[in-house]
Picture 1 (tube, helix red, strand yellow):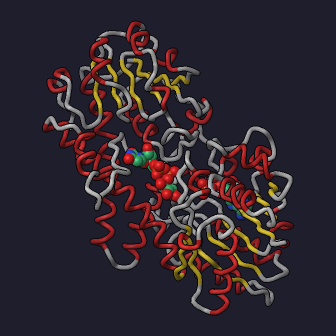
Picture 2 (cartoon, rainbow, N blue to C red):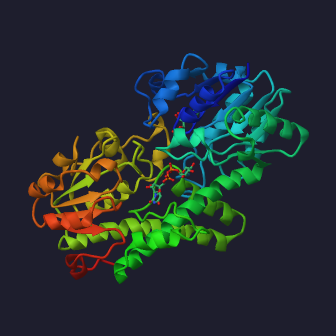
Picture 3 (cartoon, rainbow, N blue to C red):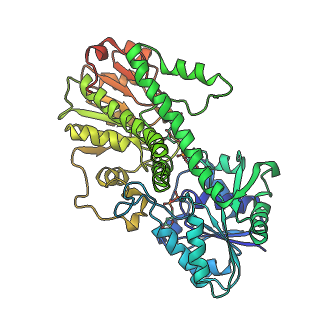
Length: 481
Ligand code: UDX
Ligand code: ADP
């Protein structure tokens, strides 16, 4: 029986290994993590992450050929293939601070593999890493190997949160990069045979190590660039009276462009896009390519601009001040169908409004109160350290913030409502009831274009929708530059 061990039981490691175990009953899969409560949660009915369909997969395989354990050393030692799926935060100090990836967790995982291995192993990079990480890892492993042979493969994960299980069941492609030596090719074939249990052969691409590592950064950069492109257009639409949804639709009908990832929004977030682009920028700079670095930096700049543009709209519409005004925030997760808030645009928008002394009442169907409070206090980039390793904050809560358990409570007596995540339930709320319970004039700022603006205007709301023709009210109150 082939044995797989995955170091890191997070958003990537957990679902990916669960699906491998489901599709490959003849393979034993053990997911290990140093963070004990996370492992305990994986072994309970309350999984540590929310992902549609995940629980069913875990329930079917857990105890059969899928195990979650805190005994990292034992299971790494026993495995034939070790996936490494630990976090790679952005550095906050030293060389490359604010851009480069911090490989501390990766290095520690590699050292563990070197220390405990007693047999040859294939080591698979699963978390997104800077190009050439494999080389560094190879050095750690071979310098400490005691004669054991390691083959490094890069097998980047392309799953998106909220659709992780679907993406894993039917991936557009599986990418495996390895050394161009006979041993490297043999390792590629071994990993390929795992995926071949359910992925058609023509969807399993093999490349050299560096191409695989770079492809992941490139794919995320291209996707994020589409969002920044449409968001840039949204500003122009507001200025000209065009409707960004109509523009996206018309543009996306060109088969060379395609319709996906053209939804204007308050900005993109998540554990990959912002971090990977910064990383790409840093790699370009390190390789003496400042023009290329500048090009990709612009994708982040437009994203930041979109968030501050949204805050400016809110403040300027409400007579240039939100001081002591209650603003309801509907949605805090970085997208719907996940409880994940890493780099969510909601953090920047909330902080912007708090900067103007607003009183925030936040509701998200999946994000807990403590989590929201922690995010609003945390320094940028600290989010990517596991909870137990995060620096402690001086204060434990932001006073002007309350977190509610439903949208009606959040909006009660509010002056304005900001929709920051596209949760389906926000489309079907009783907006008449919400309007009746709000201060007047009552505003809705739709950062995800989920509400029917015309219907809300009929009720009496003043509505701002990203990239849509502006209400007369908003035209008269131009956004602060
Ligand atoms: C992304 C990539 O899609 C995935 O392939 C990679 O493995 C990890 O990063 P994820 O971050 O989970 O996945 O979510 P995604 O659906 O890509 O959305 C990212 C952000 O962009 C979200 O904040 C989302 O709301 C935003 N977005 C997406 C838009 O604003 N407009 C769009 O049209 C699409
Ligand atoms: P991702 O979204 O990439 O899956 P997460 O932050 O959700 O990242 O998960 C990474 C996990 O890796 C965390 O649960 C963390 O505790 C774990 N981890 C980090 N370093 C190590 C290590 N050296 N050994 C075992 N687990 C580790």
